[in-house]
Every structure is written in structure tokens, then in C-alpha cells.
Length: 467
Image (tube, rainbow, N blue to C red):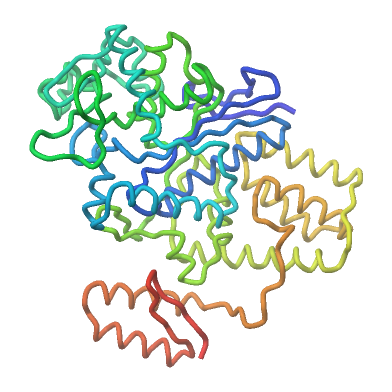
């Protein structure tokens, strides 16, 4: 059965044909570990997990690489502002290395909580400075770089295909006189591959190089590390849609200019999570994390079920009402699955299960149509199939969803559900405390108590108990 993906490079749905039969080499852009990953970031990592699971389901041997950005990512894609890692260290009064280690560990824990498969390699940018310097030397030798007062820049006018991924109108950018943040840049789209350390202060992360002491540009690490682990030309590169116009476009320019080969065959990008009226800002520290949802008594699988209800290329609007609906839907599904599990001691295959499997595979192989697959699972659970057949298909489909149904157990009797009304009040109380409106916070606490619940402040959020 053919496997088809939407390729951002061609803007069409294409049949997937690997470079090497039976094997797939895949690179996914990982987190910048200067802060917690918010729930919107996790949408991208979940889409990439589904992609990997579908490839494995189609009997491919997958080599999966993910970078950890711990240096070089400036607050602006246009090579201005502070390094996000230095910013995080300043914010928390810690070293950059401590910040990187802490937020990397938190990110990995979030992946575990969502049952997201780890990549074969997590590669940190700071572990591969040598390879990044070698790539700059390669670009310099081929005439693609030039020096300014603040760093070494890539001359995009020397690369005829620059912007092919994002379909950029380069002449339009020039005609529109886009603001250039460095007067020394030759072209609006030029970007730094090496930034010099400031003369008036010492950075926590800086290295010697042929061009002077400094640090690599953010875009460089992914080109250098993907080539190191996967070769000059590999199958799939993933990320969020925000990576298309700058980061991934620059990766292609660096890699193909240096190697002279096509970089990647299939580019897949996940759409944004639209937060609606829920404000999130990493710079202010006011954003929703998976831990925050857990503190509000949502299970990570509730959030996962919410995300999987929409196609990865569809913008999904977040609201607590939508999350509550997903919570109810998942809990109802899990309750029915547990009833099936508890009624039989084995699974069973049949002509009917084979037919259902083929139908499921046709959905997931059609550019990861997970919502159709979820709908099919729900139909099977309430179908006329035997419980042994149902359980076989539940476990089979869960190889893609990753809900962990095989290990799922009945909730302990004291594990109570917290009404959404109480959760909303608890969140309002947190907001009141942030605004130093302690009188209102106390009023809300009493209101929660009147309704039969108690809110207990914790170091990272709060806990709610039934009185």
C-alpha cells in the first residue's frame, strides 16, 4: 500500500519513496532549551512521533535524529537581539549550561508523559562546534560567505535556489526595501553563520574560530549535525511551519552550497496551535505547559487526544472547553476499552480484523490522517466484533496513537474527576495572585471550598482535593 506525504518543497502530496529501500533517515528540529516547551511546541513533536510510528508501521527501519539547541538562537530570526540561552541564564541567575541541562531534562520528561518515542540521537549544538566551523570553512572556500563587523554572513545571492522551500519572492523583498538589521548585509535575506562575541562583555558560551572568538548561527547546527548523522542527502526533515521561511530555507542554502548535492527529499511541517483567548508568551513566562495542565488534573493523554483530533496540517484552536471535551471523549473511550480488556484473556485475528487493518492503514498512509483513524477506533469499540477481535485492533491501532492502552488500568476509586468549573476557578485564583490581588484570590479559594473542594498551592502550580 502506497504511503503519501504532503511535501512542503513541492506543495503537493507525493508517494514516499526512500533513498535506500526499507530504510528512512529523518531529522527533526528540536527545542531551544532556554525555557519550558509550551503546549503549542508539543503539537509539532507529537506530529513527528506519529510520522515515525507510521513509517515503522510500514516496515521501515527509521533512523531519527533530533537536535537540542543550546547556543546561537537569537531572539530574532534576523540576527539581532540576545542569544536565548544567555537570556534564560540571566533570567534565572544560573549558568547557561545549567539552564540547558534543566530544560533539556524537562523536555524529555514531557515526551515520556505523552508517550512520544525518543529519537535515536539527541544531538546538542555545543557538542558539534567543530563540525559547524568546518561547514563555514567549506562555504568560505566556495565563496558563499563574507565578513562584517559582527560576524560571518552567508551571501544568499550566490545561491540561485535560495527561497525555493518557502517560495520567497526575493526580488519583491528587495523592491519592498525590507528593513535590514545590519547595514553591512549585502542582501535582505543574508544570515549569520558565525557571530563574534561582544567586545564589552564575555559570553558564557563562546569558542575560538578562524574568524575570531564567537559562536555559531542558529541555522548552522541543523545543517552540520544532520549531515554528520544522516549524510549529505537524506529522506525526511520535519519541523513547525514557522521554520519554513527562514530556518529551513537557510539550512538548505548552507547544506547544498557546501555539498553540491540535494539536501532533503521530503519536507514535512506541522501547523500551529491557535491559542485563541489563552495568552502565551515565553518572554513574560506566562504560557501553558504540560505540567500546568497536569496540575489542573488533566492527564497528558487528554491533551494528546485533543491534538490528534485534528490533522497535523490543520491549525487547531485551543480552549479549555475544547480540552474538556477531549477529556470526556478520551475517558469514555478508555472506559469502554478497559471493559473489553477485562472481559477477555486474549486477542483474535480474523478476515474482519484484516479488513479493518487495511482500512486503518489507508487512512494513516494518506498523509497521516489520524482523525479518520481515531473515528474508526471508536466505531470498532462499539461494533459487533467479538471482544477478542476488538482488543486485537485496539492494540494494533495504538501502535500509531501511542495512548498506551495495553498497559492501561482502571482508575483507583479515590481518583476523582475535578469539574471544569472548579479548574477554571483555580486558574482565576492563580491569575489573581499573579496580579497581587490577594483579596480576590482568597475569595476564590473560599468559593471553591463552598463547592466541596480544596485548592492546595504547590511549588509548580496547585493541587485540588475533594473535601
